[in-house]
Length: 437
Picture: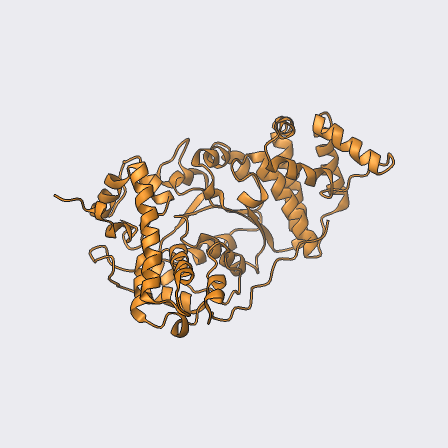
């Protein structure tokens, strides 16, 4: 298997055309370490959670490992901050990054999926940096794995295909064939997958032990540095699935001999299911950038948040050329509520609506109107108006069962200071938000 070289940070020139603007404001790609588009938003968030996590990792003794749950509202910029943690801890750790919904089944994930993908990723990363894991260890783990699944229909058919292609000489290199093919198998629903998973569930301790042996070997090769495994996008799964994986199955995850950063849904922190998330992991949360005080109007500004988001845009866009009107910039920034994903979406949408060569007031308002229409439909269909009005009035969440829903769908945000909440500012512009008395 060819080693995968991580992409280098892109060389970004601030956009001076609408086409460049749309490309530079890609909201779906977390910024890699060293990306020129990065802006430190911690003064607007109200704390320095990224540095806190890095210190926590670096402060561990040689045989101690920290397992962290890093939570936030979706779109707050968590993936980019995770990439910063990689950079800040590079002197102490070799980071291994897994994007759960890409590497594994995007709908369902279990311990077997996670452990198998971690083993593959660690082995691949060690080869990439020129420190391959010992062949005798890899052969031993491969043999155990092959013996465990050899009675399944999938393995029988797989071995027959290998035998036919190799004239009866079956040689299965570690992670180059059977193991890697199992990873691909577990990503998609099938009868084979159910059968193989059922077999692996019979050996929960052995699979974990195998992964830990690989980690131990990696640490010996790294000397004073340690493996840091990051599992991103776990917050995109149904909370019940991640509760079963990380909380019910916490003993297996916490037994891993490496540093871990996990990204469970924030609802597991706010409304625990089987047990408190904080009892299992060191929990850190990432606030949305605050643009105003809770007693101000939704279009007012207070503190550094507004200027920080403008700087964020300026690293992607030549604002003097593409959004020359300061009032339009203020309108878009205020309309985002401090959510970096919201802001990039609004700017991209404005560019697509632009009738000229730059973003004008009518273009921004069309993008905002489109977003408001979608918010209204979503709220109407789900009956969330009472929940949102209560959050706007109290600046807090409550026992209302819909609070977690509106947080998950970015209809409300949590800000710093005393930890207050408020609705998406565009919701406050909808007539249904304040019905006639």
